[in-house]
Image (cartoon, rainbow, N blue to C red; front, side):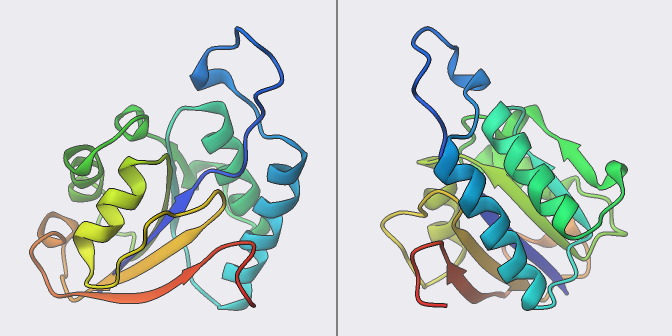
Length: 164
């Protein structure tokens, strides 16, 4: 079995005009929400093996907050350029090439691609994965290359303003 947590980066700042999109940092709300969601995942006893992130500053910071909460080694935080502005093909490429030693990964990326990809995996649909939101699925596949097209089960959808 393979498990994927699709995580939208925490809320980012728009306070600095002219900063390239990829370099936008988290704002204060993002800095509060990311640890809350990381602890919720820890409380669920989800054994995240790797934290795969877009190279965008806001996504990397969100992933590093999760990794720190899980006390993960630095080598478990993996940057994948394909996740910045990714569509279904980008997400699938990353998933299909994951190391087989990982059974559960958290993938940190951006909308609208993240929500669209989540909706392609499950009969459970959402109009929007909000910032710091987590959409989790599990596959009955044994190898990551078989993930898409396998039997994928929706596990949960959680976000900062959800009743916890």
